[in-house]
Length: 142
Image 1 (spheres, rainbow, N blue to C red):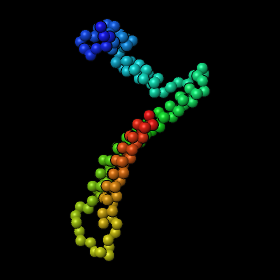
Image 2 (image 1 turned 180 degrees about the vertical axis):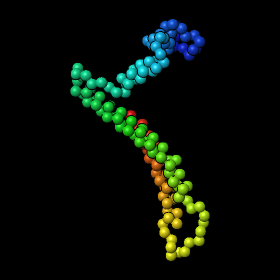
Image 3 (image 1 turned 120 degrees about the vertical axis):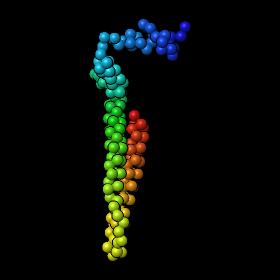
Image 4 (image 1 turned 60 degrees about the vertical axis):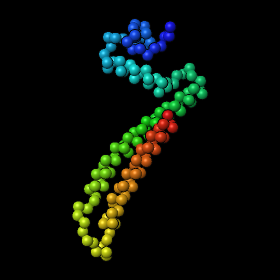
């Protein structure tokens, strides 16, 4: 008899995947269960350095902590770049002229040539590329 199965209706006491089997008390609230799960997962992401570890293990734990911090920084940076995209489009639309007017060739400046809208479109492309690049770097780091 196989210990692992896919039938959820067959799960009973002592069956792998149930609360009793995972050591989760059924009288715990949902918030307490989530805190316990987060603490359990954090042990695998953020290693603790103890005095009984050898120097190589301590160095490995420190490198892993730096990688976790770098990954979180890249994730936050990517989110910030992604959030700025709608604001770039707002400034792009706001910078467009409301009416087309005839312009004397002698009075043409950079704004009337469409420099601002063009630079905002380029900025949008750069921000999208930066967001994608940060996601890829985050995946590579961690």
